[in-house]
Structure formats: C-alpha cells, structure tokens
Image (cartoon, rainbow, N blue to C red; front, side, top):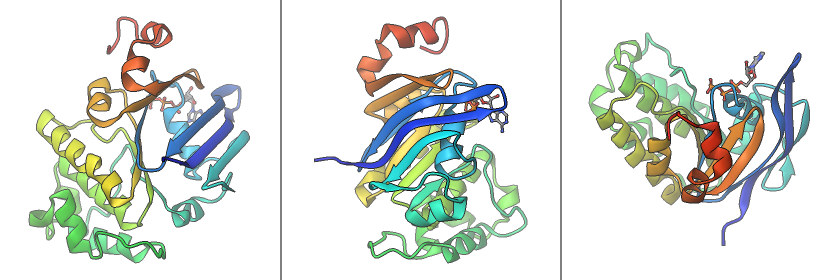
Length: 241
Ligand SMILES: Nc1ncnc2c1ncn2[C@@H]1O[C@H](COP(=O)(O)OP(=O)(O)OP(=O)(O)O)[C@@H](O)[C@H]1O
C-alpha cells in the first residue's frame, strides 16, 4: 500500500496583494512520480519554494511523514530528505563536473538508508555524464547541465526530489534520456514531484497529475481523467492540450 510522505494542507502564499497559493491541499505518495501543471503564474514554482524553505508560507502546513516541517529553513528541509533541482541549472561553472558532484556529496545528509550511488563517480555514471567528468561545468551544453543538476540533487540523498521544469530547453533525444532517468528513481526509493508546462512530458512520466490555476488546485487524479476534465480543458483551451 502507498502512504503519503509529504502532505500539504491549506497552503497559502501571499506576495503583497498577489495570492500565489490560495489554500492548496496535496499529498505525495511514497514511490510515485507526481506531475503538477498549470498556466504561467498559477503558483507551481511558489509551491516548490514554500515546500523547500525558500519562502515562508502565509498559511497552511507542510507535513513530512506526519511531522510538521512548515517554515523550516532550506538546509533543514534538505536535511529531512527533500531534494530539488532549479529552473536555472546551478553549479560552480569554473570547477570540473566531478568536483561539483563531490562538493554536493560532502553536504549529503546522514541517512541510515542504503543509497545506490555512494561516490561522485557513481552519480555521474547514473546520469550519463562520466565522459565529461573532467570538463568545467560552465562549458557543458544545456542538456548536460540539466543532468548535472539532477546528479547534484541526488547527491544530497533525498527520498523525495522536486524537479522544476526539468526538460525546459532540452531537445527530444535529451528529453527521452531525462525521462528514462527520472522513471528509475522510485525503484531506488526516491519519490518524485515534477512541475512543467509540457503535457507530453507529463504523459511520459506520471500516472497522477495535479492542475493549479490562480493558486488553487482544480484537478487531481489519474492523468487520463485529469486531461479529460472539463475544468482543465477550459484552462488550457486553445493551449497545449
Ligand atoms: N518572489 C515573488 N514576489 C512577488 N510575486 C511573486 C514572487 N514569486 C511569484 N510571484 C507571483 O506569484 C504568482 C505565482 O507565480 P509562480 O512563479 O509560482 O507561478 P508558476 O506557475 O510557477 O509560473 P511559471 O509557469 O511562469 O513558472 C505570480 O503572480 C507571480 O507573479
């Protein structure tokens, strides 16, 4: 049976007069790949930023295995086992790829759980960047930089990873490689929540899909049902569906 690892209850975030999250309820189950979509400005990134401790919520709660982690600092959130990648790939551009991963590994949380990638080399092998280990991160093409971003996030030993538009800017071949990689994560005990605009990507990755619109959740269920939901069709009318 699946059980919720992350439970979000009535989450609100106000930026001055802008309501970015208007009271969102959301559960992420152990072992799943959950997709979150929504039009520009619907609150997807804010949701991640609040969960990962970048922003403090204006209201509501975030529970991790039942424990209240609302408003903890980013390093504490990372410490409980919630990792994430950024829309802009982040790395030390002047350092070799392998050094970037090594530095991230040094910040890995202590965890009693067996972890499949015990060295920086193993992480690079997993994301397919072994051949580029000695290159400076700053010279990597965009697609490879995204893969490095995933290696850096995995280095912290998360049991949930939040991916923010992981396929933005990737070509079809790179996207397929990314999908292949992400789909393996649950087998390694890592649940996934991915936000993106790209419905094709979501269809490849997820069984369950959540749709945000103006900071509210308007659909949540098996992807096929959600994509046929009249409320969702209305939001995307003439758009990507
Ligand atoms: N730091 C901030 N300060 C002020 N307003 C913000 C901030 N971050 C987000 N917002 C506002 O909150 C709302 C939700 O933005 P958010 O970036 O979460 O949406 P999104 O769904 O991720 O959009 P996109 O798909 O364009 O990335 C928008 O109206 C945005 O302008």
